Length: 95
Image (cartoon, rainbow, N blue to C red; front, side, top):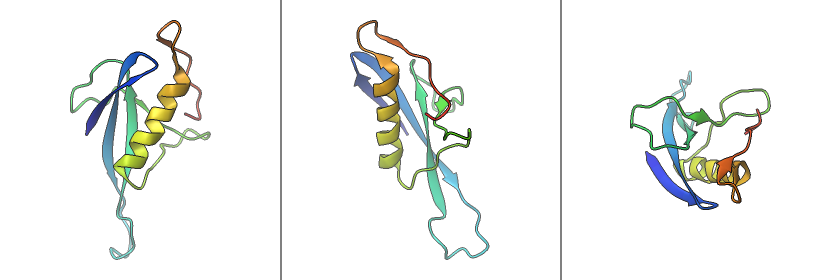
């Protein structure tokens, strides 16, 4: 899923992808998480060139729902897009 948003006057795109989890017991949930990638230009559906949200250790952040993934990516953009110059600031590893 790709969602276009306008944050601080700049158009940005958030791509949410499913991230299956293999469990020994298939009845243990969740069996699927979601990842979020940020784009400053419209991505193709199969694009993997976005900035994937990661934690402080550089591990990909996993979300329990697409809504949670979009919300986290929106917060990332709100922090990284400078409204006055309409350019992005340097991302940090924990975003």
